[in-house]
Length: 96
Image (cartoon, rainbow, N blue to C red; front, side, top):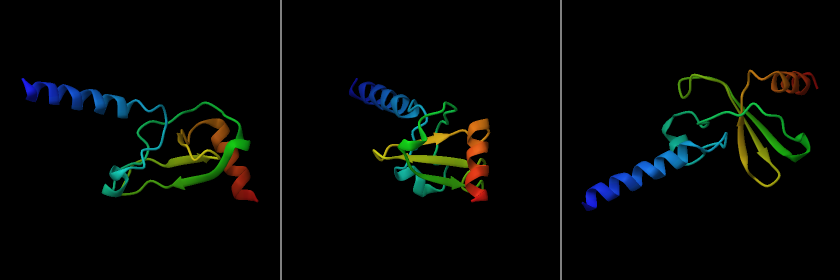
């Protein structure tokens, strides 16, 4: 019975972690050579809140390009690199 409770608890925790709405998963998994982003968001948010933009090209660690926005409050969000506003922003930043 204790084993069943433990398994159910682990399933609930894993489900909660996987539903992070675009938050970057920068824990121990990032050091195992996997993608840092579990989910990506497409919604636009105020760029004045952005402290840093990190672009991680696809490679052997992850099959997709990852873009992580770090906000002023140190929260990290993964954005979809195929979203039009992200493409436009990256073009503007690379020109300057």
